[in-house]
Length: 258
Length: 258
Image (cartoon, rainbow over the protein chains, first blue to last red):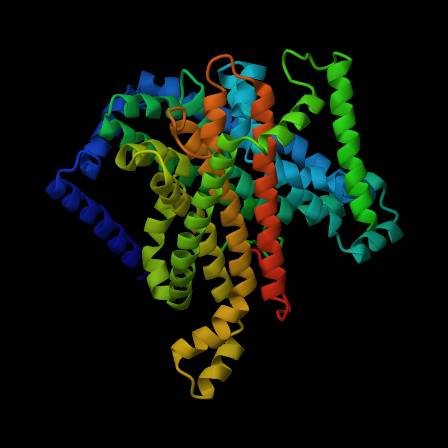
C-alpha cells in the first residue's frame, strides 16, 4: 500500500508539471517530456558499447563525478585519521578548537578566487575547493565520535591486554564511525554544491560548465536537463552512501537514517 | 578559562607560523600575501563603505531567507511528522527534490528574477529548508508515545497534544536543524552573489567577484573571506546561545538527525 501511494503521488506530481507546463507554455518551465527527451538525446543515446553514453556525457558527467569523488577521498583520508588522533588528544584539540570552528564556519566559496590563483583554472582547483570544503564536517564529527568512546570499553580492552593498535581497530574506530558517517553525509551534499560552484566559476568541462553554457545561450531545456541530472546524481550518491552505512554499521543500534 | 587561553594560543601560533612561512619564502609571496598584510586589510575593510553595504546585504538576505525557511519548514515538518501517511506518500517527491544541489538553481533563478535580494532569498529557502524539515520530522517522530497518549487520555485534542507535547519535545531537533540550515544559507547567499555579482550585485560574494576580476588582489579577497568566516561563526554562536537560553528547561539540549 505504501509503495502504491508513493507511486500515485509521484505520478500525479510528474503529470501535474507536464500538464501545467504544456498549458502555460512558459519559456522558463519546459514540460518534463521535453527535458527528458533532451537529456536522452544529449547524454544517453550513445552506443551500447559505451553504456549508451554519448561523447558529450563522457566528456562532462565523468569529470564532474571524478572531481566529487577525488575531493571526498582527499577529505576522508585527511579528516578521518586526523579526527581520531585529535579526538583522543583533548589537550591538543583545545589548542586547535577555535581554528577548526572558524575553518568550518568559513563559506568555502569565498576562497574560489584564491584557489584559482594557487591551482589555476581546471580540475586541480575544483578538487581543492571540494576537498577543503568537505574536510571539516568529517574531521569535526570524527573528533566528536572518537572523544566519546565509552571509557569502560577502553578499560575492558586494556584489561584484556589488547595492544594500542588493537584497541584502535576494535574499540575506538568502531565507536567513532557512526558520528563520522553523520559528517560524511553532510560532506556528500556539500561536495555536489561545491562541484557545481567550482565548475560554474572556473572550468572548461563538467556539468556546471554545461550549465553555464546553457544559461548563456538562454537554452532552458538544456539548463533544466542539467538540473534534473544533478538531482539524479545526488539521489544515487546518497543511496550509495546509505547502503554503505547499513553495511558498515549494521551492528550499531542507532543507524541514524530513518 | 583554560580552554580560552589555549584556543587563543593556538590562533596566535597559527598566525605567526603563517607569517613566518611567508617571510622566509616557504610560501611564495606572489602566491599568497603575508598574514600581517591580510590582517591589516581586515581592519581596513571595516571602514570601507562599499564592503559594509555588501556585508549588510548578505546579512539581510540571510535573515529574510532564514525567517521564511523557519516559518515554512517547521509547520510543514510538524504536519508531515504527525501524519505518517502523508509523509509516506510525498516521500518519493521529497527524495527527488532534495538532492538537487541548490547552487544548480542559481542560474535559473537569476534568469527568472534577476540578481538581488529576491534571488538570494529564493535560493536560500530552497537549500535551507531541508535540514529544518528533516530535523523537525525526526524530532516529532521521536516523541515519547506514552506522553502523547497520556495527554490524549486527559481529553486534550490531537492539535492541542501536538502543541503541548510533540513540538516542545522536538524543540532541540528543530533548533539543530535551524543551525544546519543557517550554514547552508550563508554558503548559498555568498555563492549566488559571487556567480551573478560581477556586475554590481549586492553581497559579500559579489564584492569578492568584483575584486577578483582583472589582476585580482588576493589580500582583499582573503580579508573579505575572513569577514565571511567571522560572520558565519557569529551567526552560529548566536543561534547556539539562543538555543541554550530557550531550551534551558529541556533534558536533551542538542538533538541531531542530520
